[in-house]
Image: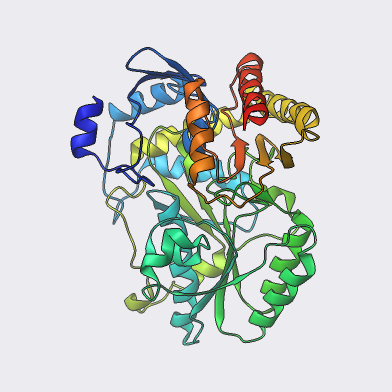
Length: 421
């Protein structure tokens, strides 16, 4: 399998000239994966945060099977169907109560793309010139062009500078940077040149699980509302229980104007994404003039099979056992944090919900995909643990169904890495 892979497949975020052969996975169950040689791995990052209910979840699989025997797909232009309607009825009540409209797309990046286009076109439709977007430094919002523009990790985007929408970045309101963040935002708002402010609420995932307080985000959102700048919560990573609540925005007193959802939406079964909106935003496109419509779509928009998977995932999210798993993982993370926070190789640790992050103390800075990161990654893989360090930061974000023993093994291996590197 690896030979054919090497001959024909191009993998994401990979320099193929220097990469190790890709591991061929043949089976998954719960928090575990097995390769073609029978080696077992604990999936400690839920396969890029998409499998909170575990691999081969029977509830999701059964929902998909039943939907496939009824209606696998129908175009969403000019048509609708019961799974999409049922998903809206199930999701809207657990979103912030200002969210009233849902637009379907295919993945987190396209959910962000839709949100940014809506913010910009809303003002275009009104005849106002607001052509810029505000984002955080070191943000990551995806790999399509508008999402790239809003992202602040330069090596992902530097080849495309000059080809993207205009985005201005402000500091993240981490401890000590709260005033600088608010002041920078305020200065931009006063120009009346900006249509939207996009953010990863409370946790910047790809930046290394950088965390900041909800009270600070509330202040930023409140300021945006005073100037008519739409706020976009990118909950692609944080959504559906990762932070301990259904959504990171549930920690806020202010409500965003838009939300971007994907990853855990379908429990990792089928690619699907949503962008949700206030009625005000929808009304900005509701007009006798067809040119003011949102001309954006995807072939698989609102795919019925994906909607069925999402409905099953929402049922699982509300299950008492799943909620108990989220609480248990959080408590285990806190206990592990106490065990390692004073280790001489630990610079910082942080925990929110099922997210744990640990920063190795290093004499020199480590690049995102540098030698130290790669050494750690190979060490974990050799030990049967799937973790993907970000530079010198190791994070754990496991499926909610991971057993106490499996999670303890992950901690044990991370502890071994601290003692070795």
